Image (cartoon, rainbow, N blue to C red; front, side, top):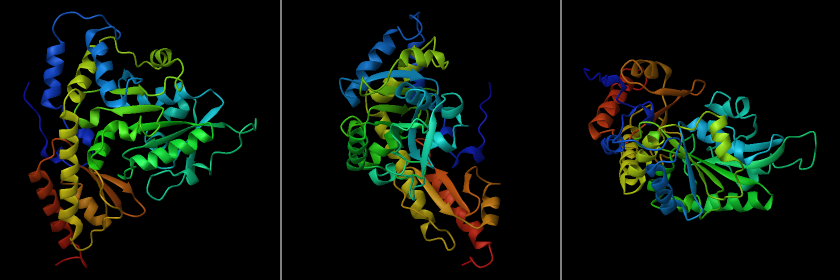
Length: 355
């Protein structure tokens, strides 16, 4: 088969656009030898548990699934009864980008809170943490946060610990959507457990695809009392892989050494490079700090339209003109510099913004 590489797709729509890291591909090839017991009773999935415990503590147990939406839905379904609800930021991925799956497939009521930066606080949680014992209101049970957030911002260990302490005082559990947890940990230069186990998080959705896996995410139960029947729920939601060794082998390659850290640091560094390259271009506004591998910018609509004919990226907010640019583990300095030059070129061609 002839490789098909479209240079337009190189940057900067999503870190999901990237291919598979070569070390992950090699792990899949290695796992392909011989027969293994199916449905997770293989040696790779057994070894995977030890790898996750190295990062998240001795109580951690990982449950591989196919994708991130499933990781979130399986996690939240295992944490809630049918009359219970999940408090999350209005901008949370579970609310805005999963096709209603938590509510439609999971039957989970979401109680959303507007946030200026995508981050919940104890005070913001209290806006929805009420009505306990009121049979007419879905009962708050879980607080779900994302790190990094959908707006590219970071929670520090202290911020997560404050949220967990407040939630637990209210009798609530805490779920963390960690589709880009590796980027958050790398940006803050802390172990992943500092943002999860040590801070009091009960259940984690751990992301692999955005950091170089072919496919696969994992539900990681940090508090064994917080998730009920997760093995049955995973099967019910069609997330039990028969050839699970190929998911587990990828995670082992990612996490047993420093591949996750190298990849996340690179993506973050390229995000910073892009922000620096466009920051001083007349007419370009960066509405919030760039903290990991996501760059948000506000551009004139005509500039966005012309750029999108040359590069793939998403318009985040049509009303404000905000766009999102993502850097991946395989983004290069040349990619960033070429894109920044294109932004400068298109801005210069816009009346009122030229040099």
